[in-house]
Image 1 (cartoon, rainbow, N blue to C red):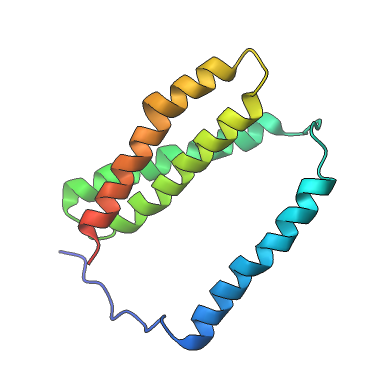
Image 2 (image 1 turned 180 degrees about the vertical axis):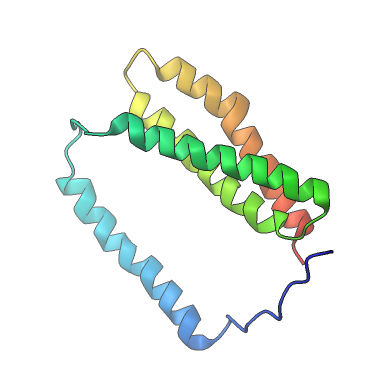
Length: 131
């Protein structure tokens, strides 16, 4: 049985658009506060758990995208879009947290050779299959 998408709600209302726009604009001063107050280094508890959790989400997104594509399920587009965002975020944090360390080369290699190409492939799936 094929998936049939329910009628989409009209999310382009002025109130909803204003909410998202306002939230994005409100982040600008918050980023300035963070730039001045967040320490350059930090000891982070549960660091491994955070990265393993992100990798679990990536594995689920990539696997889910593949399985949904295989079935021709239109939900592949949404899963691929979310996975693309997670992959780009993973590359960003890998590279920025490795700067000046012995892991910087590996982080750049993984970003350029795996994470960003996979993010672009996921974005292409999301854009091609949207409807």
